[in-house]
Image (cartoon, rainbow over all chains, first blue to last red):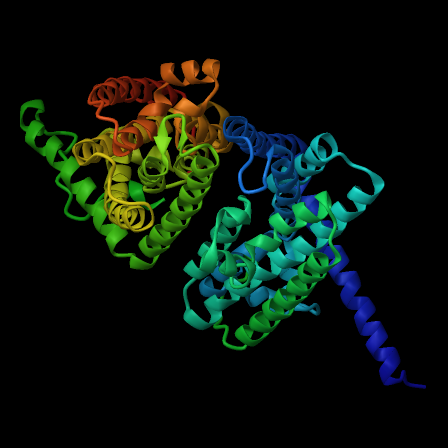
Length: 271
Length: 284
């Protein structure tokens, strides 16, 4: 007796998820192989984040409130940003390298695997240094974010949405390398998004502000999430989720279409 | 890392050349390394463009932040107007963005991986070639950032607060780059002992960000931190040119930079020399 199409699909999906799970486990095992190095890298990144917190404390100590932002709201923004950045750049570390990999022809080995190439690539490598961001972000939220059950739930939810958005944006800009043959747009997308997300969007006005809510969705990476944790608004939450889904679909579609244009670099060792 | 490659046609003195005849040639390698490194940057317009766009973004964001702060604070922050702050940010960022942001990490990799051993075979100082090469790479970027920053600051805030002080900004910027390069090499030399300079890189960056006045004018720092910053070399790397560009006619800042440059070059030389003595390379 042969298995029906539905059973075959289920088996294929199960194999795929098992493969992706094993990939993620391997990536974590690789990152944790040298525990001393992992610990020191995480500590250095936490120190790096602490400097930004010091900067904002000094800034608001001197100027008080700027366009509705005070030090407490700013620390919430930092907590959401570091946690989001930690997951997007630490756990899905290859998201920011897709452009360079596409241009250098580093994807050959991935194409031969029985798992979706994008999912595999995203889970393949952990960047240990950014795991320090995750720890720092959670600690900062615990210390300065006045955590209650409701606020913690909102914090977790907005971080998930912001991670999807950030990772998708990096995939989208990285996948442009398939079309233009250069990876600079990817680098710029990464640096631009992180930089613009680090500041309250309300310091901008007019066209610049519009851009940060649309083309470069930096507003949804930290400003909107921080405001939602501080004071939840269903409409803003819906916009955040919709933007994350929109960029998720755009990133996946651009990568999928772009991959058809991929030219091998005959490189089998670095994927 | 490409900066360590000897330029084609380099006329660096041979190891066997007599000491007397080596003098003109030893000066020539500086020019050749500087020129070749600069041309390498210009040969990659894509990378240069990305640096300039990133620089423009940073300046726009920080200028927006400080302008909003000045507006919320009665028009000034620590004596700086919104226009002065915009020029401050445009120049402090130019001084830092022009350099290879991962310089310490890159040097650390070369030391930790043993690549630096090949450079020891050259008849020129490893540290000297590296520093001149970094300066050569930074100068075209600095010119681009300066042009873009001037346009951006003038368009968004207004002309320079004091054009005469702005004239001192250009030499101060070059000195800032040189101080920064020397200090980064001194920090990176920790890799001779630790095999990696990643930690030094992170720490150094943050010191320049805050104590160097890159993100925040030093006058905004609380008293004790401001006093500490005044005693450290980091202010020579961003604060000095930025302070001049923001309309403060203080030529003494240039002298201070020269003093720090001498100290940092000597310091980097001593640390590199000590490190080279204990360098061990496995394999070939």
